[in-house]
Length: 427
Image 1 (spheres, helix red, strand yellow):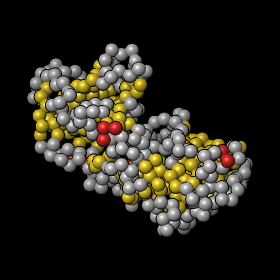
Image 2 (cartoon, one colour):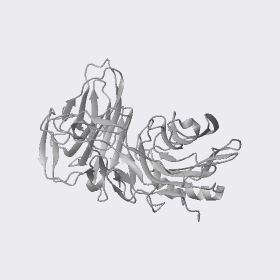
Image 3 (cartoon, one colour):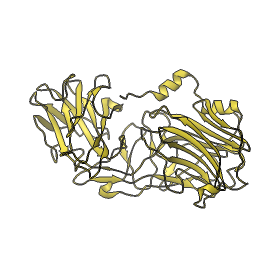
Image 4 (cartoon, one colour):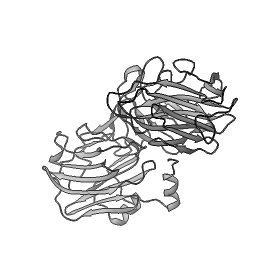
């Protein structure tokens, strides 16, 4: 495709408070970025180009290289790790029928420090830690990085409730689960991040989270002498695990990421164009996560293009002029863990939504905003309802591209390439 975007953000170069754009080359579209320090030292982490977890300072964009290749801008909500001593299982953790021994096995941060957890009984060998029962029913996700020792199986569970998930570390799969969601992610050097998600009821008498050495058919049965390695435990009040937040003697909080840029009237054509982005939702479920072009007045209805994930895991393209909706196109968002390519086209009496090479919706009636209306790009709507996920590519075109160009822009080279992008082990 020969058309050149007026704004091109492909995350590669950054500094504190800023992500640099490739186009325009004068820096006019460099994103302003914020992420303040959270309580307990939760600065935010990423997977760097060496495949290692790295802690990033406040207000520094996180270019995440998980799965290799080109990086993505990682944008996440506020989250807290509610478990203490996330890397030291000799403190704050109970260890029934299991020994926790500090080893020199290199952990996901590249340091020779992880714990060997070895069963000393067949009766539920485990480590465990309690968290406060919430005042209202709240979804929680429990996660930990684990590496195979001399046995294949490890499990997560929760008491009260009795939910569990068993994982096979030999082949990197979820063997069985009664939790609301169980997931295993592969990292470098034989490490996996395993997780389970469960709603904690306010009526529960306890909120105890456990990591087990177990057998294939039961999370509560073990084999004496079986062991695995563990590091980086986390408990969050979210429906999916987010990037690692280390703790010691206190709960640590990572505050949300924000990104936006105003003063872009010379680079955004309000009367016709295309907003394109490639992103990975990163499993973060929810509603109303916006990317918008708007007039920067705080009244988005006076002229705005909105692309967002909405109820029921949908992608939605909405275009408003002076408080009147001109187009509203909705398409199911099938994949929550692979890269998704989305383009929204707007021009007088022609609005289209494209997803992964297919035109999924079209509206051939509607007006567009006046010239110079769109001056701001933001990963939110009025600095609220923020977009969260991993953004690999974002482009703005000042002309309405053809169907063939949009198919090429949002498509994959083959179904095999698409399958490889969307591959994820989840149950």
